[in-house]
Length: 523
Image (cartoon, rainbow, N blue to C red; front, side, top):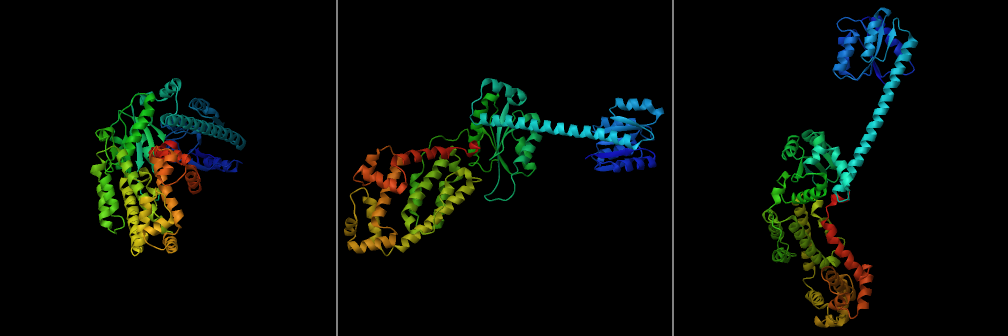
């Protein structure tokens, strides 16, 4: 469907042409009219019009001047010319200016319909071709970007492909920076992502030839012209009130450096969690971070000694001290990651003791596995603190509920200290000076499982730790946790874990490596 403008200084001709157009099988979208070229030009500027049917000779601005001016202003519109026999020379000039045809006065309905349908068909064919070309171009660009993204993330690229791809944008790849943009959002924050708005803003800052989007999700990664001030994009984001944390690499030369540049920008992205007040993190911000450290285990142990004391203030203070920004900002981000894992492991150890008594209550330690699942370090510390305070409350309730049962507490302590020795119910009941049958009933009633099952769980819990953290042989670990034979140990482990000890060791040792991975790289 097209819009048509009828231009003639005689009203009865304008009205007659409009009436004819409305009778055609193919109805135009909208029919405008003007008495001269000046009026027509204003309408062309204000509306989307595809075809102009105009007289040549009119006052103020004739048809030829209208055609010339619209072409000069870049208005994309086709023309049909109306002329008399005496105006044939003008009609020839109109054809030279690009008119699609001319009609002799008086205009016949059939001639007008054939001419309009011919132009209409040309317009629709051009639209279809343009759409197909744009679609093919878009697919080609998407394919090129996909190949670039895969190469950036570590896929192999031969020299011929690198050279050919580099030539598609030689000015950019001559000297570029890789830019990682993480939108500032809160957990469960409603609203759509602004990544496309950020991308559009980046193209305005760097120009179409100075910026390529290599990745949209989970965060935006751009290659940008290194000649532009690194602060230009963050400044533009701030001006547009778009919250985003930017990490930007040093200048790199040549497409062959893209994988290394990506590694650098991911490292900067991770470090941006340590510097939440820095809007644009550059390599110089982390150049002097210490690469060697020892985790503060004494402080960790002191913190966990508070567990079960119902002293939330001191626990909160302890977390704040461990994760003080002046401490974290001294070291590489790996220090913070290792500290987080150490805290979670100790929480797991404490939870394992009281898990049988929690009932439907439980800690959500899975949510603490990956720091980078959170919008920032502050949000992660808040979640960690929340779970530690819950553990404190659970442990406090656990201690209170068994405070009057010192014998049972002593029995549990005895089991945990002697699980690696030959141990049975009679030995433990004798240790706490209780009748065998009475002790058995009380143990199951309060613990929620029988003595044998509890002892098995303690032993297998210790065995899992040894499998994960040591290189001891399986037969050695079996003896270390109190099993008399390798066979009985593997049978108990398989029944409890649904896998062999060797399978568990392989599985658990793969996990730390996967936890270090940056989630973006698997998109």
